Image 1 (cartoon, helix red, strand yellow):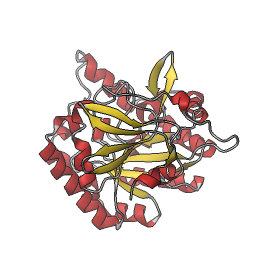
Image 2 (cartoon, rainbow, N blue to C red; image 1 turned 30 degrees about the vertical axis):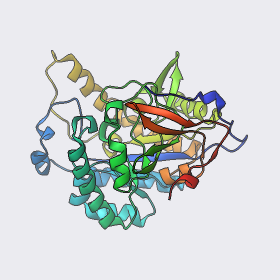
Image 3 (cartoon, helix red, strand yellow; image 1 turned 120 degrees about the vertical axis):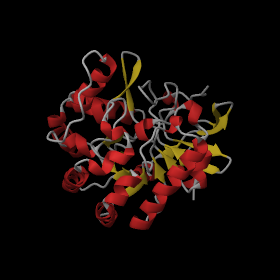
Length: 331
């Protein structure tokens, strides 16, 4: 159960000054997928796979350069260990490096001890390579579900102060339909964590993601821009997310599932649909709206809600009318 605060209570954005949006990259290899069975589901096979992540990430870096923007690269620890020069380059060029787990496992399929070890291993590699605090986390597959809220005190214990793992809408292996849409501070026994939910828009009364991944590839550019403007009109920054493989139509392909397996076949088709449109859509989005890192976007965003973990969900601590910058609540 999550006690939500109506977005209508938020202050409107100042005319002529749109919010600063966050540009996020889930830095993983082309075979890091969920819902499609392949030989690469076993991490022991990862070293046998061809690698595309360096070249594809460099394309994203150049797109950001052209727009004069920087992004947050949520990095799988295994990828960082295998390609340390790429991670050092990201830090050197002013991008924020965040944590995307070490072994790319769904949080709700892990035990707290497994999550603790995985998080520690990933953070150790990333902090050593970048010299950054690496205090932003995104769960693989947006897999922080209500039943996995035990992960938040563990995150905070390891120095994570910002989580961007939750899609506030129904989704395959993640997503919480009644989760707040606005950034908020979550109180845990280990300290406060800023939660920045993934952007959604309203279509026929339903919350729908629009700003990244397969949604960005599937939706027309005009609908994506409409989604950002809907969020801006409510005083809320947007968040774009992309995987390096999504700008590469020539990437290797996972094994196609048998046609009688409808669920995996649909997932497979969604995984590769419209790859040739991604670069154009990203470039247009970066020209049209203001983007920065997660840290930069949150520094410019006033907080309107504080929640606490309670009874397997969230409970409101404070509501709109007591707004203050997020930075005032965290070190």
